[in-house]
Image (cartoon, rainbow, N blue to C red; front, side, top):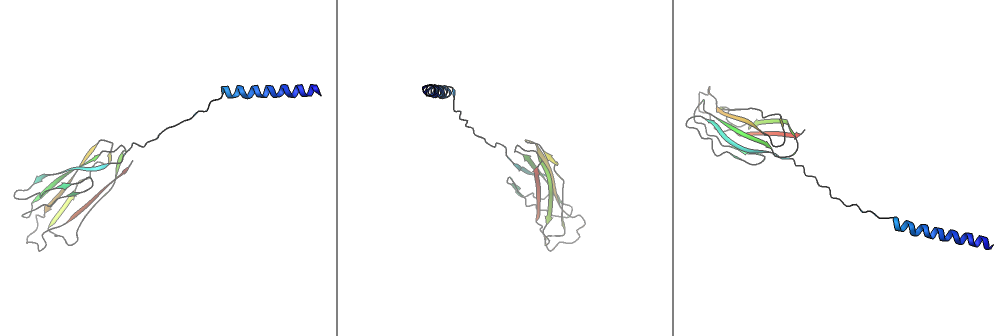
Length: 162
C-alpha cells in the first residue's frame, strides 16, 4: 500500500510540475485592429458655361450644384441658339459607367423651342472628367410669334459603379 501511495504522490508531483511548466511557457495573445472603408462614390457636375451664343441672345446665369444645372436662355428670333458645355467629373474612387440619360421638355412649353444634347463618355475612371453639350434653339422654320414663349427642359444623367 505504501508503494501505491508513493506512486500516487510521485504522479501528483509530476502533474504539479507540468502545470507550473505550462503556466511558465503559456501566453495569452490579444489582437486589436480597426478596419475602415476609405472608398467614395462621387460622380458630380463641376461646371457649366455657354460656349456658343447667337447675337442679341442671353445665356442667362447658368448655375450648377454637384447634381444639377439650371440655365435660363433668352432667344430673340428664329434661328437663334445657345450651346452649354457641362463638365462631369468622377471625384470618387470607383470606376463609373454611364447607365442612362433622360431628357424631357414640359408638354406645355413652346413648340418653337427645340433642344438636343451630346452624350458624355460612357466610362469614367477616378479623377477623370467628361463633357456634354446641351444645344437650345429657336426653330428656324418658325413663321409666327408663338403664344407660349418658354420651355422647361429637364435632364437626368445616371452613372453607376462599374
